[in-house]
Amino acid sequence: MESDANTVAEQLHRWFHNILHLTDQSLIGIVPEGPHRDAVVLDILKRNARIILSESELDSEGKLYSPLCFFLAAACRKLGVSLGARHWRAALDNVVQLRHQLASARKESAMAGLEIGSPAVLFKQELDEAINQAALAGGASYLNKEDRQVALGLAVNWGMRLLLAYALECRGSMTGADRKDLAWVASLVAPLLTASSGSRSN
Image: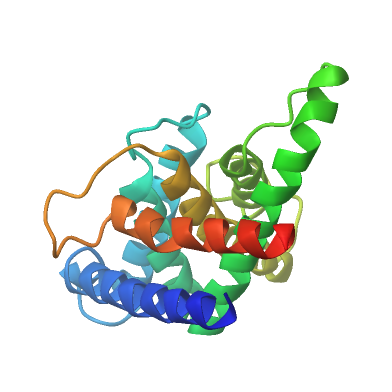
């Protein structure tokens, strides 16, 4: 399980590096380095944040895949950070653990008449709040500039986890063997759930 999770984390790291490169070459690269490019990054960040917030009900077709990827790419550029394999490993561990926790709690929550929601729903709630606190969706934030940067960092944290959980809950299928899309992400993560379930039952 340990080596499998590390392998998946490394694959996700390389995949997201390609997403960053693609975003740089297309959306962000429409203007040279400098203040105008900074403005473009902020525009991409805000535009996709609004799309994410507007999707209050998570779909099962993968409509949030592109906005999430563009949001994460722009946020990383805005913060000047990169997402390494260790960041993806932490996100993977969190998603796997939460799915098991919620599966265990589902009967109790039903008995109490409470709807907790799926892992993707819970991660999206946290992402939405971080987006609002970072003042990316047009609303007012009572945080200062430094704290808004912290909120943006939290948004990246929740966005990674949402992406993984959302992939598992969508029903899309890959259209080509070389296509690395949301279904591909799900195909990487799903075996870790099975392996983790097996280790817990032993």
